[in-house]
Figure: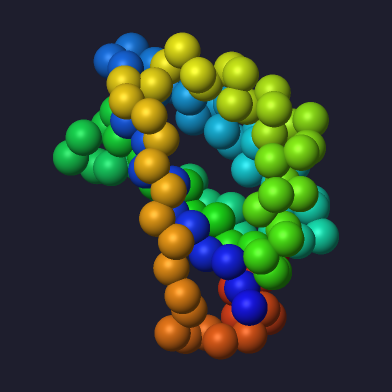
Length: 107
């Protein structure tokens, strides 16, 4: 069963650029993990200090493996002081696509 989570992030004013750079590095490294199918970073157009990280994992074990990586720890530590409020994750079940190949990020 795939594990899909949207992580809602609100950063302090003036931190958006630094957050995006740290998150870009983490996203690129995360996509090289065998358990990560997608790792998208979205910015709210109306509220540019708000972001959503769309993370799709191959199975329920992959998020824990992701959180043990050096790049995740570096990201977590780098962005901690940028948070306007605690990050909030919401888990979703896939309706479509139902198989991993439909979720895989390329590039």
